[in-house]
Image (cartoon, rainbow, N blue to C red; front, side, top):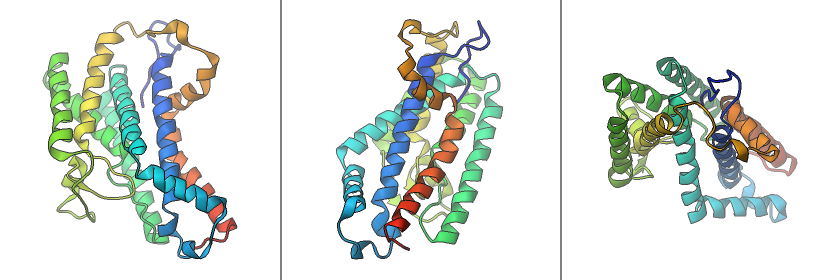
Length: 271
């Protein structure tokens, strides 16, 4: 989520960054689609009454995926790509405070919309500490740290410490899933507790953003592609998603959920 325009031409983009970001977002979209399908038994009161069929097979496959090692490992890899590339984009932005505040505003909008949708539908849809929220907070905190000391070794150490804290102390999964209250919202943001349909904590993910800024400073000093001859036409659709990542990220679940619900109702499922 950032601008990767090469300053030498003013318009040419660094394709591999767009591609990596687009690929990670497409994998997250697939992950969210599996979440929607594996939620059928919870969402639809007559799920058990409808036997067999293609949808039942898809739901069972989604349920297997959701609790499999494939999902656990793959999800972490794509999230690392996403936050790492977002950290690289930090080095290309002219105003990271404005950028972080903008995304924090989008995160607040997502929370308001999903909370409203949950109240109306009764489904567990609220997103409080999602990817956008953690990305925004990571950007702002990294900005402040670089204002204190704009030193790559310092940020590398901070990032590494954040990852170690996330893996070794907090863990990749929160110890407890709770309701959102005034007393525990900070614990949710940190990652000590979980809440909502899609939740992340600051740790270890802020560490990937910090280290991403170091990679950006070291590898992209000249603001040019490291692999200019590897760019091919088949990469264009994925790179397109990367170039428009914010729009794709904000709209994809609305589109997916609408399609899934339409298919479900057509097949006879109801709340």
